[in-house]
Image (cartoon, each protein chain N blue to C red):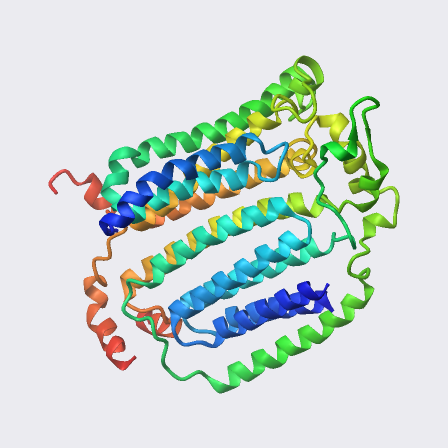
Length: 122
Length: 162
Length: 183
């Protein structure tokens, strides 16, 4: 059920990116899709009653250099977190690129509406 | 971008140092506590964005010109690639953690541990911070001169129809 | 568990408002609310690295979006929408949604991931041997800077390229004026 709500968020972003005619609304739809995908990847790795994948002094025995088995059993999956971390920063870079294209198009044509721009070029 | 009132200018001139210090802390302790190079770099960039919003673009341009920021950006990327190639030369494989395996193991939970991981965090933080500062500086210094002259009559027509 | 559902419903409602409102500034603020809800979700899903990165990235993204929309005159969207195209798109998206819901039955249940049931996955090896292989106590850092550092190199390249593209597009003097010695 939690996965279904996340997929619904992705579908709302996809609807906004496909149907709307304002350029900034299309960019907002792409941002909503990126948030939904990152959220879904982190939700795949959740363990019920889990702890964050950071070793603290309670889980580590200095004498024997061993990690407590309680930590091994209840820590959440660290692999999707490492991949989503780079994805979030890349989404910021691509947002900057898309918004700079929108600003440039507004400076040249005077409108954000993509049907008007198509008409002006023809 | 123009500046804001005197209250905002005074408060932000105290706060900007705290934000910058916090960003450096998040980068340096990235291998012990949550954070790392990406979050710390974005926090460093946002301290300069605060300055740009409160004092205006020209003040920041005198303090950190965009040529120096782009050189810092390239320096960060170059340091990261240099660490990878040193791993190949000294460790045997590309990106090998040569400091941890050979020279400087360190103790767990200390600042000096993890080998090349804190150095790579510093390189990534420098690169991400300088890149985002450049992008927001370019957005702030773009002057909108109006629609270009050959499209202007048609654009005004659609503007009135909207 | 109910906290997750409350935050997800909040994000879905904010997304619906962002899509349907006519004012661009309200839509931008609603997307900011989605990012904030996402950061809270990451915190309760036991991912503190991601929560910190998401909140600062979302603040900078809001600043970039507001810079694009606030000084432009056309912040209200008017005009009629085409009827047939909208209905066809909604029908196709609904079919995709139904197909996706079927696929979710094959996924493992929420809270019991794949790596907790199969003992030989990579994640188990990263958790068990992360500290002695790399020396860093933050396992996520040791993954993206030691075990899988190629992905970080790729991310640095993508960010570099995106920033170069954005800076070149926003150049306010054209090349002719820069090269022409008379101006």
